Image 1 (cartoon, helix red, strand yellow):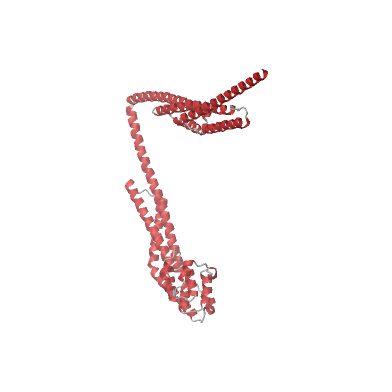
Image 2 (image 1 turned 135 degrees about the horizontal axis):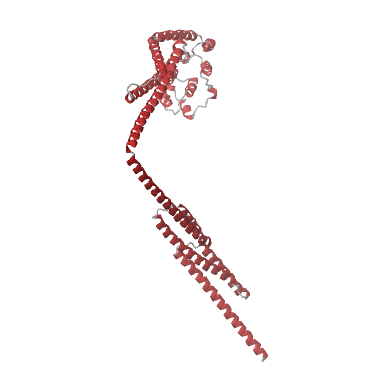
Length: 440
């Protein structure tokens, strides 16, 4: 009898335990299902769900682990962790929905305030921070930031109220001041009219004198500029005609540029003088400016006289160059350039003419190289010729590669000198040098 009782009690306990476990298992499954529905509800409200989805995944893993433990080891499953995670999901959903509703309300409120011409820069900054926090799924922190946005709205409205009060007070002051001014003008209109006329007249005189002063200052600067240009022209003529320095092309280029600058300056001076005449009859010239102008006129007469003897100076210079050419011809009578090396260095104006004449008479190439190193500071041994120039040297003569040489991006003498050293056509080198340095 006792054994039967024990057996019956054991069976009852097993059945009760099994029923309890089954009920517990069903309850947990229902909570997980509710959590999934919660996430779906958040998705429908356009609320980011990465955070709660991660919690749901952890809850499912915990549930499955406890279930497997109970089945394999016949132990009581512990679903407390799963319940905790599903509870967190529900709490997060409530907070997120509440904050989302408040954000939508704030957005509508801000749109209404924009029509009231409020300064909403602080409000929009706080609202953007709120949105960023919400989308980062920090819903609890975002709920606190909602109050910050409302605080910024209150500050903006308070500032607007102060501005309106200040504007109203200033408007009232302006009205009072206008009324007082109108009354004063009505009582003293004669005095005010006379004062206005005097002020306008003085202003006109002052502006006119100021314009005249500006124009005179500008004219004085232009006259000084013209003097500098004339000094530069005179210096260039002295160096070329008297001292014999520089080439004819360099002198011509410099003087043409200076003459162009002088013409432009004189044109500017004439324009300034015309504006002076239109502003006030004849221009007002200070004694210092008049004295300087007379000096410039005298200098101009000297320049004209200098121009008259220009032809004779050119003839003298041509004779000097002819004498130099004769000295070159004497040098060219030597068998090789080495014999005339000291005489070449002793020339007053060594240039490419001797080089071209020596080369045209088929003198020693090694001496040509040394002469170039002395005169143009080019060491052919250190020259790195480009691939394009090396291709040009494959031609029979430099003449065949002439168009290609002229088409190079940076043509220079290096390829030609190397070509000449390798026995290329000399006549073409001479013609090319004449074209490149514009020297006859």
